[in-house]
Amino acid sequence: MQVNVPLPPFTRPWYSRPTQVLHDENEFGDLEKTRVPWKKFQFRDQTVFARILASGKPIVHRGRVEIRYKLGATKSYRASPENLEPVEGEIISDDEFKAGGPSGRPVSVKTVRETPKSAPTDDTIIIHTDGACSGNPGPAGIGIYLERPDEVVEICEFISSLATNNFAELTAIDRALELLRDDEKDRHILLYTDSGWSLGVLIGGWKAKTNLDMIKKIQARMTEFSNLELLKVKGHSGQKGNEEADYLATTAVRREASKPARTRKRSRSGSDSGSSA
Image (cartoon, rainbow, N blue to C red; front, top):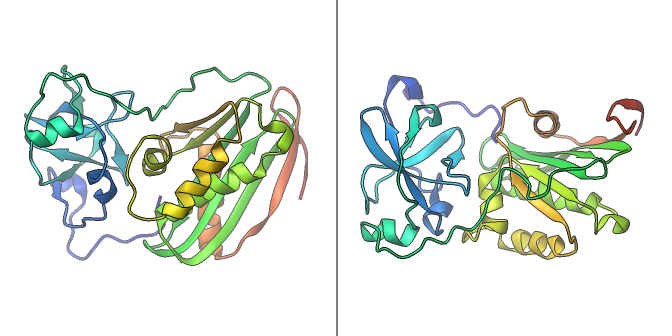
């Protein structure tokens, strides 16, 4: 997510125009190098194509969905996800889309999940991470909200005066994994992020052009945990944990300073019973 980024001069808000042509190649540039599948959607009175998650939902980036108007099209537009309606039809692989149509081959979808394979139990560790920057690049911070059965750990950390949003999102995930103890490596761990890009490059098979060392570092660290799941959560949707992580990250950016890590004790029912720094 980004913080306090003004609209360019003379740019009308999204609701005053049907779509906006993508002039910034970095907006969806990493997606263009991936093999993320496509699916048909209804956009007002037209059928369009959008890249999708494993759930079949369109990938949302900075509040917009990349759409194209026909198979094989190279020009992208941005649309609000609220304006897209699902249309029945098969998932189209990226290769088939670029070739101008399906070839009849089965589609292989690398999974970016929104729901865990195994439901959380009382002993599950649940982590929400977020990265933020003011400008892209600009001052950047991370937020981590880690819930153990007996405590909650909050991290509000300013990481750089000049970093990209993607780097901040990855750093938050890396830092969260660092917080886990050796005796927790076989625990059921659910790590949620609202960064679809981070999940794509870490577990979805997307090909990144930047932050390669950080990606490899996180992927290597992930192998240390036998029951770790990285999951997608919709940002700014009111979900507990994600909202706290967002607040911690944006606070670090606004202050351009870190806050001491905070640990709050909680009962088995999840209620707080005290706090410590």
